[in-house]
Length: 109
Image (cartoon, rainbow, N blue to C red; front, side):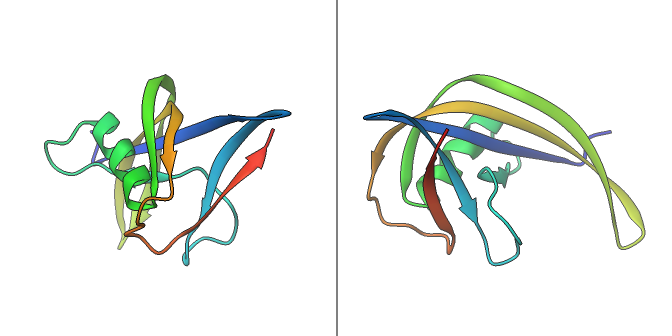
């Protein structure tokens, strides 16, 4: 049984000389990672991914599903099953006002 739905975004943009990919670093993380967010009750995984990008000051359009995985963790002695769905997205705009306190950057492939 899936306890939590998590949406991730694999966002890219075309720059002169190649493609760049968007990664984030949060206060809780030790390294750079793809943006991801828990879906709210009744919210689709696509909408959760778009909301994540909006909250960190980037706007993206989902193109297609990039992959999915089921991950099991333990929290306070109980097993929690997460369904992770990642979506390929294309950056639409940047420079929006960020709501979440994360560090984001575009890195070349």
